[in-house]
Image (tube, rainbow, N blue to C red):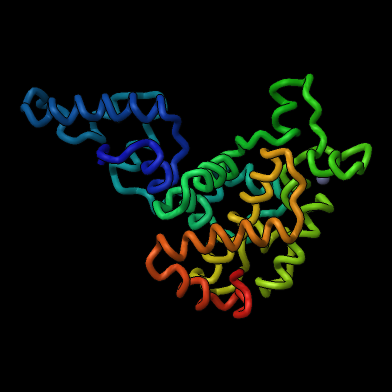
Length: 265
Ligand SMILES: [Zn+2]
């Protein structure tokens, strides 16, 4: 089981773990397994048995080794709690879509910069003003888009402001949603998908909205001010690449009930 890396492990078993802790656990487990294999241990016969002798922090890993994943409640994960807090939505809205959201960054067909963005979004490590100020109180934490548009004093660049309520952002995402996406544009739909029964439709909605936010983020990093035309062309470019690299992607997109047929850039 330790043939996977920390990232895959985290997504597969929905357990928060740092790279460092993962390698420590992987190392001791490997040693324990070889000990058992070589018959050097009379008492311990399984890896989970070995881990039960390691007191600190081994409970989660024993659960994994004992195949007890069904009891892992996704709503209890730290990054899920942070996600709800960041968008000011009460759980359990969108609970069934959470695994899709957490696993998204690991989709091999997504360009690596988008995967990094998704990972940073779900692990709350994007360099937004509000978060950076937490680390360095000397920086200006106000919204980059609002400053560029002279909406002064510019509001705090929080996750929810930057990706939804900022007038620059809201203007773009509402126009994009009107043109391409059918559900009503709400914070819940935009970040967590709908409570619609089709997980497939939600998966596409969540993916497309992540790509939309990625392009807003990329504009901030380039110190430019996006508008509906630049974002629409960015979206068409990225979705075009995905149609070429991922077999059936175009079909997946067009068969998704959430998107308007004339859309897709
Ligand atoms: Zn703003």
